[in-house]
Image (tube, rainbow, N blue to C red):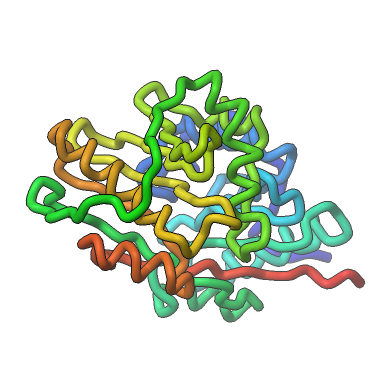
Length: 289
């Protein structure tokens, strides 16, 4: 007979109001959206029939075996075994399914969440840096090192051309996370921009720009096709793009890079970018038995 006061069950729409207090920067509407997007991989933890926590697995584009874990436990129930109870239920539910690995990003490896996950078998998989060039107007940018034309393409062209170009740039790397045309279309925001570096009438590189605020730009992703890497085209792409952003009055530019991508890190540092924060991916691999 199970005497536990906790129960893990599928989510109900009415759970959203209670669950929103568990995580920050979210709303009941967002919680309900997450319920709809997880294809059944959403679990509510209750205490005496009242929701006190949840866990959900979000699919990652282009990586059908890997899912991101999100969720949390109400503060008054933490460090009482409720989180472990919920995690074990999730692990049992996905064993033998399409879920092969589960990942969760943390800002440091000694945070309570990181310690909890590592206690339950999650291991550090990689460190990603956020690098920033701020203030951009004060940056001194040398002329491009190689010839090439930077062209902005519209959304329709971006949806069609970005997936194969991205694959040419990153298919051989550990950070390869391919896009489909549908995924590009679904994640494109109204202020997004896609710029391509064209050499001899052919695109050899790209940068996808996002605008979190009117005066700031995030570049994610950015790349040069493999056969043109190490020849100065990455510097040409980024320098030319930064010059354009300077002329438009942009104050801050940020981008992400894996910490062990030493070539890219050196390039960004040489242009004035500095490391401002880290994110660590903790990953759990489910056994096949």
